Length: 319
Image 1 (spheres, rainbow, N blue to C red):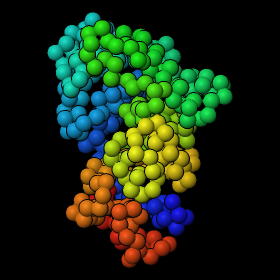
Image 2 (cartoon, rainbow, N blue to C red):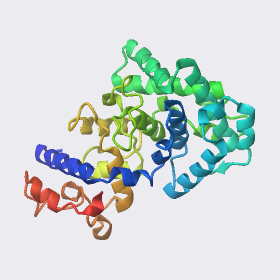
Image 3 (spheres, rainbow, N blue to C red):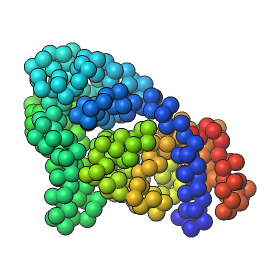
Image 4 (spheres, rainbow, N blue to C red):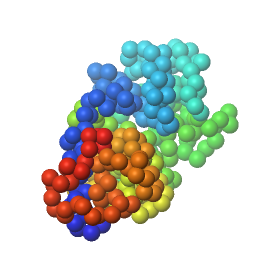
């Protein structure tokens, strides 16, 4: 991006985030369920469950999460300490490619890792430190740590390891935890990390802030973030991959190196509300907060360097 466009985008992103009603949006997002629990142990487990099923229609995700958590009971950590009862409670649960057994195994595996390390955060921080000690580049170290962390959960819960087929032949068991080392964007895993690591702001919870710096996070890149990022020049890549997530995160780090994913929640929701297109669309683009710097729209009428003008052109719909 040209320096002028980069400065304007920074102003717009800060404005969008400042005006977003984060607490109101939280209740239409899977992360809202995490905030209903009080202990770190329960919040970690609910966050892992919520992030793992966070693909597709948000209303459907929230409805199934509500059912899942009601079946599990008031304390997921205590429920996971009794696998036999947990499996019985989830026996008839179904959500897309998942069966109740898959989610029970995820919960039991995560709880066993949690018990061994004290918290999931401590377990992940240990793997990140191990990867750093090997001299890996920071983003590659994060990817490696995620891979080992997820391997431990799979192993403890009886889920197939990365690259393995489940004995049942179903897709669900191996789809729960992405293999971050395989080159995919692993959006759901990075979403989970964002919830746990970023400072508490009404959306993210900061539970791991003392053990993992927010500067280490990667953007959770889905189709909404990818389209927005391409449209405003944060990436030219056409795939939703690890490299794309690194490229977008690196661009955002120019705005805040200590917390590059701080814009993720508001941008993702804006992309969903606007149904961000891949081409100029006057109806869908009307009111979009980053329209002044979007590659599909001419720059005429935007006074460079004028934050007042940029804010005036950003309607409330963009939040």
